[in-house]
Image 1 (cartoon, one colour):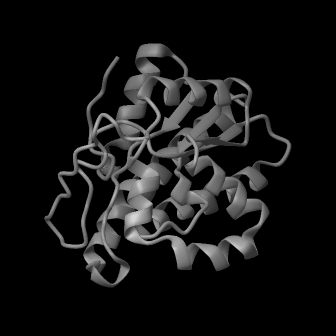
Image 2 (tube, helix red, strand yellow):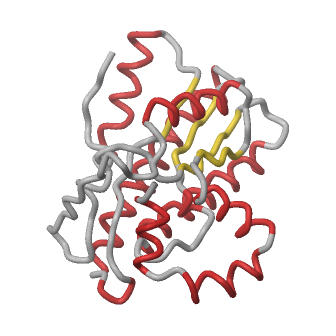
Length: 221
């Protein structure tokens, strides 16, 4: 069953969830996958973009999660949450600062929830996804309100296929992995360096991560 609604319209979330329960009688997994990207220099971003991006990437998802969480706690103690984060959710990625901040916020919310749940059986899996073929960049915010990036992903781009990404996300959910890093090299390598050698990464990244280099890492074969 497909239910179409706007994730930022928080007033309709309970209604949509009730329709799901009426149709299927239960819910086992909620995958929070709604989101928009953003491309702009930090200094050039209008604060309205920050607000709009957080409405889509954070506040809408958190509201829906709280509705489902109440159901899980009362009726399905083995329920699961899947949360689509990003490489930018664990790395301060340049040229996407508002987007990165929204993904970092998701980690703050859901890691806190994980600790609150304690020994309860409800699972949380955060998907730290690298560049993947999709329309996300075409519809991305820039730094100006009302402007859309309209960026086309070339077929030669060094991105993971959508099918492969979805398969790995499903595997992570099935195995109840807390955090799954889903990306191709060399982006995946930056995950490891930033997490296991943070001081080294902080010294290297500002010197070498120019806009040109970021585009090469993201787009070239």
